[in-house]
Length: 275
Image 1 (cartoon, helix red, strand yellow):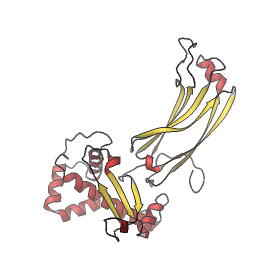
Image 2: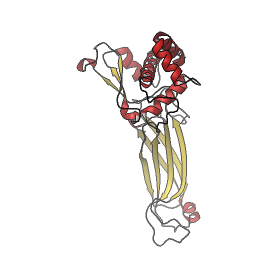
Image 3: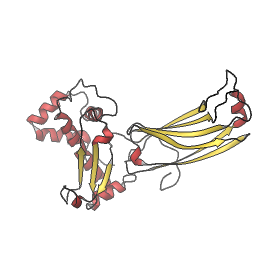
Image 4: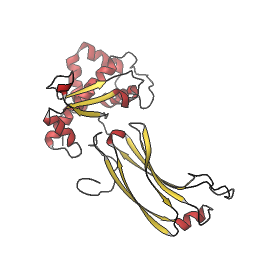
């Protein structure tokens, strides 16, 4: 569901950010009698239709909605789901499954007997994050913090490279800077000026993240960081911005010629290349 109405779910939402909740709908038609007979279940077996979500960016998952099905014949189930943007990120996986609702100790050996046994399932995927680094963010009043009152944003990085990305990065946006705060509010449908602002934030965030990584001696070409860690996120960003280049070479360039490194990074993030 969008502001303009209902559309088929796309493969990706390139303008998504953590402030954007997702409103999803799904209609499922189930022939209950056929599902039970082909699964070797009696006509009175209770079934459940459930939708479960998983987000790779946050490493979170949970039940979205479920419906118990005690009827017979052909039924239509309507699911209306709202997922909080703060819980998402990366690849959103939506699993829909028809399962046995209750344990059946009298079931035949070849039939499902445990509650939750899957009779049918379907998976849909929605990529929420493209080339830009995505992480939790908050819009706050910088005058109430130690940050400069007139700063537009601040990227906060904490913890080591082995820590989870979701707990290590936080983008703070100053609500006093109306242009920047509005750009993030419009991130789902950005205006040309919003795209320019978001491009500047992306470029600055990328620079801070790469510089933070290069300052860490454990960030080397053969590093093996666990999935979802800050190090893995930094490595993915580095490889995207500097493909087929060695970390040692980029680190040397950043230390010996920081101005040239800054220009290289501007080119890599394609700053202000807005459509």
